[in-house]
Length: 251
Image 1: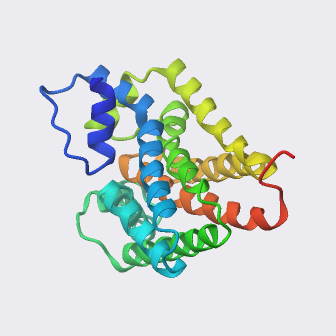
Image 2: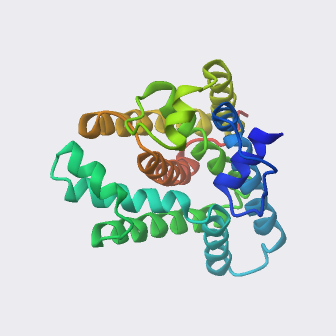
């Protein structure tokens, strides 16, 4: 259970206390449980949406977004802000970009990226609730936490210290591949719209991966967090649009 508890402690604000310092292998194995943690987050959001559906949609969508951010402690939003600041302030230089990512201060571009992503997510959640697609809120936290698996499996981790380095060194590749495949397959529950969503998910992720390699030669913890926020937003918006034009069931 230790790898699962590591994942839960790292990805959420749940008060998890580990009895001892985890090994590097356990840190790497925790990656296998990231989608499960995403499912837990999604289940909480679904429970709130279902039990409070009588509330005005504008209030309920705001509540869901706040709870979503609170459950993750803003971890991935922090990575998004750092990456946005570094991408603009780095002027295309690898070392300068990596240095800015380490800066704990948030610049105007970072703040703007947080506002844009939060606004787009809120809009998408509003429409999902309006369309009574409550089950869809289960899916996107899961998809978001498949992203670290994909990036660690396919991309070099550029920093030579810290949690990310140990994960890359001891990554259970076969297990990650299986979990990634099964996680993506869960989108097929939503019929043809889910099938199209898988291609949008992969396309967005491959594009981001390309840009990371082009700029810094690989990934960091911040770029992984940024990818989670960006791809969650892209897939949320895409699903909302698809729901108007593509069947969300197979029959």
